[in-house]
Image (tube, rainbow, N blue to C red; front, side, top):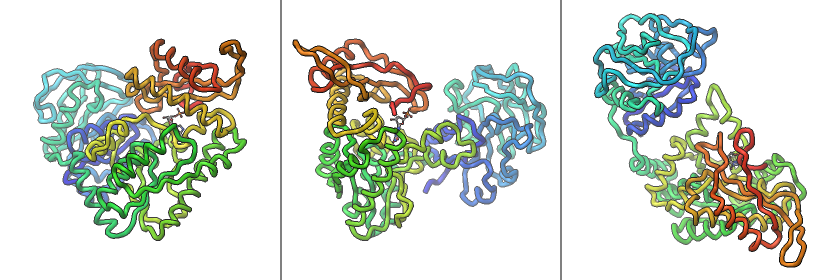
Length: 513
Ligand code: XMP
């Protein structure tokens, strides 16, 4: 499907994703693969270049991660970054020495010999370093291309074999010319041509879906979030009415959500969508349950049960499509795991019921989140879907703290609606990662008119974040907070107090449960 593509072998650096992103930004498809991949297997997929990522280990340590050495014997250009460069030096006969001190941060790279890798760059460039060990002797065939004060062999290269090693990180923004260096490697050295963009992705994916699905039927669960919306629209474009979409109203959704999804996907896009009212089933299942993880488990289980029941009603369906994204795929097989892997485990509400006998289709599994958004744009999805704040699978169940009842869900829904309305009016919605209300399991005393009240309290949660791994509480303007508070207390009967959550993650989490 992709003419030219780049294999990125992952040695566990936190920047590996970024390498993949940068390569794709150059219009070349890239894939992150386990570092141990067999060279012949890799060769059979005909990559145009290989990039060895950085990693937390030292190449001199015992049991340090090692790739199949044959990747240097299959005539494919290789760029080693940091650990990847040291590994290249070690495997090809150079020397790496344990450093006494780590070099971390900005350094000035002095370019020693002209080379296509640095085409268009000055004699000196700022680069970002983060390494312990050092390359101290070149492997045969290599030349020093650049040095820093701390590292004589900061960049080495073998022009004939098209092997390059850089001790710094060209993929991070702190290396201002990093992208140019990567472009030089990809276009000049590895002679890639760019062929990866969202338009070509959409076209080839629609074709692929048509070929694969043929005249069979395909099922998908629509949640109203970005990924499943993009998925449903792609499938609809590909196979029209042979798509059967199911939207399960679990009674834990935000105000007006069901209408919105119906209006948009059924009436506007004319997708063959079945909206299933399963509110009672979920409410019954959650009755009396306080524990957040128990809530998640019950919701996950009921989702599968309802989905399965509805799917059966639709007759024989061969395929099930899911909106799995690339980060989910790599996380689940990353050799290092890492904190993001554990976060994901609770995001599997709506995951594939393992015993259902469908053939699985995951057309978005090559995409990063913002690429999925770009596909949505390409398909004509409006910004209010594409730029929606994330909403957790278990929905309001983890925002009604403690036991869940219809009444409490309603209270929260009304308060949340007001918050979002005011946040949008203040033009803050897109600046925030998430903003929502949480209904607390306490009552407090108030006074309204001449009467004493004894009612519920809600907390406002608003955070900024890049990726939900860390988050800062948002410094919403007092005027906005004031309007939200006064509207909630005046308009929502049953709430007489509003609090503002000023905790960041870590150590708090974004959701309260
Ligand atoms: P926390 O609360 O762990 O949330 O800081 C991080 C991000 O994940 C979302 N979240 C969930 N999403 N199912 C989901 O689909 C869940 O069970 C779940 N729990 C948290 C949360 O909204 C935030 O964006």
